[in-house]
Amino acid sequence: MSEKIKGFCLHGREKIMPNSDGLVTRNTSVVEMDIPQLKEGEILAKTLFTGICGSDNSAALGKANFDWVERPRVIGHEFSAQVLELGPGDHGDLKVGDIFAPLAMLGCQEEDCPACSVSKWNLCPSKEIIGFHRNGGFGQRVVLESDRAVVLMNGLSPEQGALIEPLSVVVNALYNKCAIKPGDDVVVTGCGIIGLMSAEVARAAGARVAITGIAHDRDTRLKKARERGFITIEVSPENTLTAQLQKGITDANGVAFGNNSKVDLLIECSGVPQVLSEAINVVRPEGNICVIATYGKEVQINATHLTRTSLNMRGSMGSCRADYMVAQKLMLTGAFPAEHYTDFYDFKDITQAFEDSIKATNVKAVVKMN
Ligand SMILES: [Zn+2]
Ligand SMILES: [Zn+2]
Image (tube, rainbow, N blue to C red):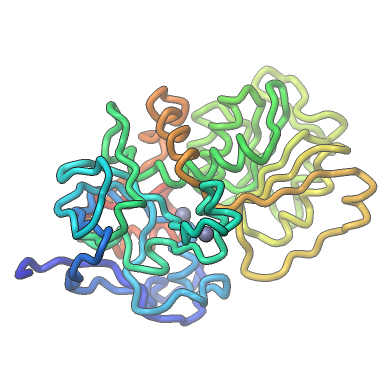
């Protein structure tokens, strides 16, 4: 292969503070890539658009919850790509030229695996995540198992295709884990893209939604949420969510949000340990907490309060093929307006895209890979 292909590669493990003065992208660099020989069941694809995930940022910052990722690694698991070549073996209906979004998580597919036997590869104990266990979507070409490919539905653009994976994660959390009902008052904590998607999907399910952020988010991410008509709540250690709900929050029509300062459901997307600790104070008895974030350290929970209020706290990990199908339909029907939340970058500006994402000065960075 004579073509010079580039990729954005994670190589370092230095612990970096996101707001540090130095270069926050010093664990990563753009490298020239070789394309490996296709093995049985693998395909070669031209990467079209790839989104930067909070987990990519965490890995780039050397956070402990991504220590397990081998370096060097071309990261990226949220992307759209076009099939260039089918390797040896059976690829089902997949053809050269098909545009697809890959399943981020590939299960072992053993018959006796409790997760894979019910098609939940996201819960397989030996699942492999593209962009972490093998090179991923921040390469201009990507080699992957054709079992991962989910061909995009007619009417979806490759730009939208890059957002199917994160939207599928939210679909899994909200539809399979949250017991969300029309009329529910829902707080989404954290206004990264998973938070913003959760807000949109919760509202599409009939809920009234508030979303939290910090002062730094006021003119970017919270602004985007306000423009979409969500209640936005700026929180700080001095002015917590609990305190603001107790003071009283109203929606655009002046109607009180929550009931006696409690909400029906809280969806935790911030990854900040204190935010999850606080969550059990703001949910009504027998209400729900859904945890989509992961945490760089252990989280303290007042378990006695959890018992006494009979709360349901559930985690939600990734997504599987069925969630990708629902996510595509939400995108097709306009339930999630991808264009409102996307900041596009050319591949030559990929390091800038990461820097902006780590510093949270954009909303959702999507890189045009070729
Ligand atoms: Zn992700
Ligand atoms: Zn398995």
